[in-house]
Length: 408
Image (cartoon, rainbow, N blue to C red; front, side):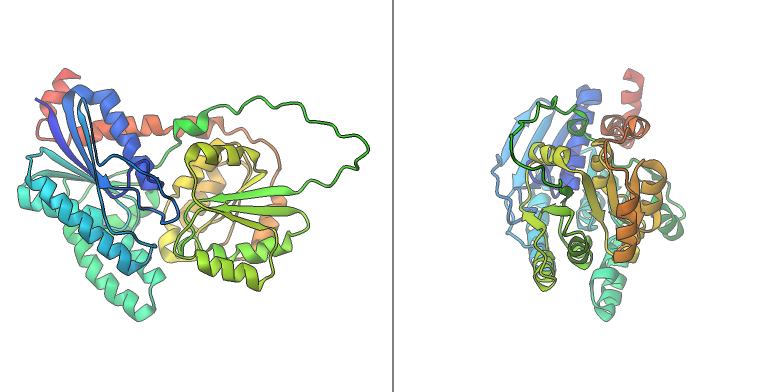
């Protein structure tokens, strides 16, 4: 008999987000490696990650061993209130789907705790086994992005939700080893796995062969400007408005910044750029990953920054893995675990303290411009290999896993 899995992810392709790509990679690993043993119902949303990125997707897709349901939810602009309404709609519809069918296992991947808590609620109500994939520490994040008084109140409320969610789970995977001190201290009776982010096959495709440059006679050669690229969310958590305007202004005679993305802090970024009278920063809306890969290949330096908040001293950004695979120099404003990880494991990555302009300039000057071989890193963090291990780990949570093990 097959293990019937209710697979919950608020984002799923063609939506653009780290959680979306992570969820898809795990589904693919399950189908590729144990497809004869599983029946997967993915329940997700219609693309809504960025209000500036519009794409269409089928409400219902079905293939052998896999069904994908995309639920329509209210649009949002990354604010707390509109996102709460959006998730509330999602939760209501998911519960209706869950009531219509019996499952052996629930999987939920979650960065803001709510999808995980939804999975825990359904698990508790139906007595179904639960596997959680935790991509962020939401309690820490709230204290960083909300005013102090409101942040403390929210932390108390969501700490209780987190506790009931984690304790309901049969297995909990943490996306970052930096999370383990927090979770081990709070839940000493739990054993946590560590299946991290990884590098998608898309970013491992070799670049096309360069074409011969066109030589134009009689025109003097102009100094070449460096192209510094950032791609991803532009929110409070990234804090780009606190570093990019000043850094770009300092480098205005030698480099251009290309920022691709959207998010809740993009207006603050635009105002900061105008205030500094910056002319060498170019903003573009979110784009599909094949177009993004082309932009990475054209870059001289890839840029990453996380705001100076406690929560971001534990995370392990998926963007680091994408960047590393390009073999481009990386300039990264990171602290804590992600800073140590990038410095020690990704060659030619210059790390500086978040929001520190002088440190950012020094780090930029220390980079070696040009291709950087990172073969050991790429081999170790292949997403295909990581997701294969996670797929088998997930299956052993099912009450039918003994049958699965005998047939493997």
